[in-house]
Image 1 (spheres, rainbow, N blue to C red):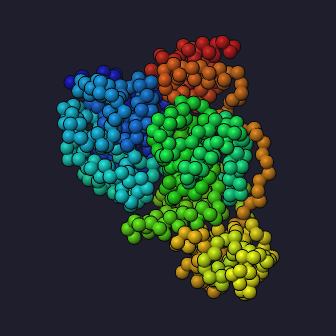
Image 2: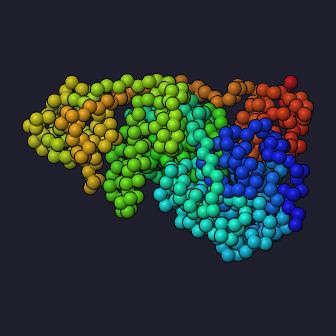
Image 3: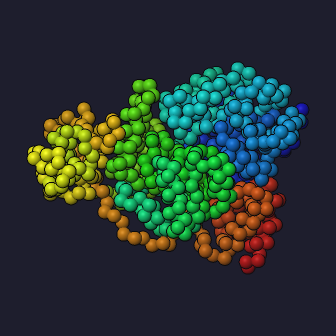
Length: 606
């Protein structure tokens, strides 16, 4: 049988990396993984978003005889990867529910004829008896199971159909399998190996650190205004994602940003399918668009030039936070992960956990994930040790690219203030919210305080030496640390936890961070992640050519060339095709397809 890959000249991994993808060197563990899989062995790969997971199966697919089957749960991701591969000269296709009957039949015919290097399928389609029978009739290079954490019932994105993928090992025992994910704790890793690689395989764990991402966590004062100042000061004109807890907040935030002159659209499960698809397509294909979304958006978005991910509310777990922030800066250029949260966020998330109907073991796991996120958020040192530590990776700290490293926060001995606050919660009956508790601590003579007789409790006015904003900070940090719990009935009240006993009795101490004062208005001039003048004639000319080309071919601009490649072209100023071929990101196929056009654009600028 003649296959597409067999028609390619015999090349090793390094040659394919340069000739097909345009890169000179592998990153991290890529080369070792590729050697393992191309040699016919199984592999479990844990690598951060943007770390180059796709190359770990795409290169072996071109090295081995036959067609590689890539299992992915996301239609958008399949489409994006196939477009990118096709533009690199690779024979790739999808088989999913988005195809009409005629297109599906043509693709299946190409598959049977051995004309495809890679075929992307959803797990539901792969499990159909007709699809399994079709695969038994062709030469298979390998199986790649992307988003492999979906197999874990302990994971944050469990998908039941993934449990049935063990059929691959039974039906095709001699075909190597590679399971890949960007987020998996030790328990999830074990379940992936057990279900998808029961016959064994080598595990590769690359660093989960994303050095190009700057992590910043702030306290909510006026969340939308804080977001506006952040975007204006660092990312005006850049693509970004803003995550919100509710659909209404996502819509309101998109409307607010649009009123401020930004291209912003909402995305959530409450929108009709056509609107959601249209908004996602615009985000993928346009520069400078901001999506305001619930967690319904993002998984499988392969857009490399997302310059920021912002959270206006706390995510539900540290794994969700890591995965969502990982959608920024996939191209390796500087990006921001920015978040603000407040006392109400902590109460809301904790209440959701107390109201959960999940089994106790699952509830315990969810509480642990939330505790890890809260500890990260309130952490006074470098952000990376607590974030990466949860993923099982040690980091020495002092990264130089997070808010606490760039502007170290002040801390204070809050033991006495904490005891006052805890005593106030107890004396007022453990059923009132933060605003009322602070009123009592400050000795405010209000009707509500008098109505409940709290002007006569021993804690009335004992905290007059501390300002209101600091008292709210103390209560938030006590709640985050687990010394307080929200009212399980969901009425907004706070009560003591078992954990607070030693602190309340004076047998333990607690350090807290000073919340920063509200920031002054910042400049509207945005920084750029590229070492180029993004307002220069040369840069704008290349971007215009790329956008026009992408629109003509109906693909996202980054499929033509990434921003980093355009910047490298400007830096190199090639005058010939031979010189252009040396630029990172320019492979043989793209050189033939776009080389003359790029040289014409550059020549017109001279």
